[in-house]
Image 1: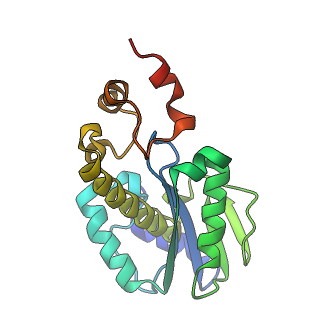
Image 2 (image 1 turned 180 degrees about the horizontal axis):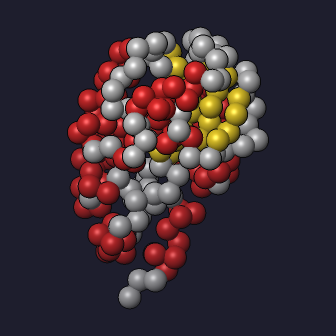
Image 3 (image 1 turned 120 degrees about the horizontal axis):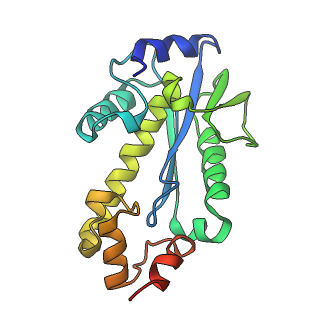
Length: 201
């Protein structure tokens, strides 16, 4: 696993003020895609890494530290209706562009996890697996993931039969079984669930 210091040093090659953009929720069957853009503070926060490599309780603790210490951050939430209307890639791009535009400080560069062809308000660069290379992108990935997880836990209280608090809307066996038993709820992505609903027995 790449350590935090390596990610922190990686960003220094791109300028003094580096922003990172990442998303959470491109793959789930339900809920929004959440995009975060973050310019981390000058002091390194130990433990920051790709959010997928960090346990949920640790992500929550790091989220609070990142928010408290960053120079600027923004979050953009694209709901399931928009995802169905314009497709998930277009929704993700829209979220990334809006998140960058909302920053209160204009960075030297925005590093983006994988997605190309964006209209950014400043210099930008898309990098494959940027959340495992860049400190700023890793910080953004934590903000996006924690924000989305909290949203899905909230939906779990509204739609407890689907188990959103556990799987966060991803297509686990338990989620698919619930989807076939109860049918889709308001936050399911119609463009994602067709084959599961149509395969009811």
